[in-house]
Amino acid sequence: MNNRKTIKGYLYTFEVLIAVSIFILAFVFMYKTAPLKSNMEISIIKQEGFDALDYMNNNDDLPRLVNENNEQAIEDMLQSILPPEIFFETEICTSDCNKANVPANMTVISVDYYVSGYKNQYAGKKVKLWLWV
Image (cartoon, rainbow, N blue to C red; front, side):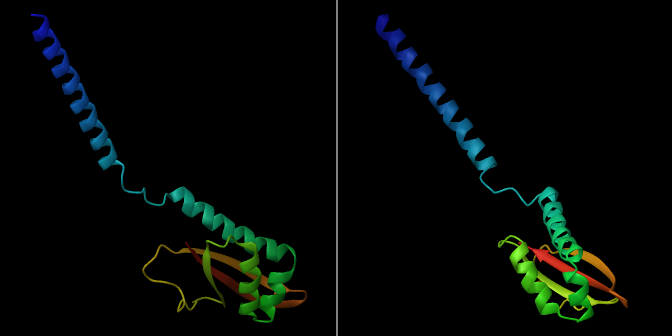
């Protein structure tokens, strides 16, 4: 009789171990894929791009460079302002912007920043900034 209770105890313990193992395996398989990028991350990247252009505008660098049509200098300044994991492309344009260097197979965030002029010269251009990770 005592031997029978011991065997039953071992079987119940074994059943509990199997149930816990199945639960852990199911949990691991459900959550093993990495979550997709959230919209919050996209909005943070967009805000960082806008803030970088706004910082350049407040220092009068952006209007001057737009007036000179110096796209490379804008990109060099953005390189030092934006985090290194964010890739970007800029274009100075009036209406339609050329997005030749923008990847087509990634999630790309777009920021438009309008520059009216520099000192007494009217520019009426926009700086189009594409951002991706």
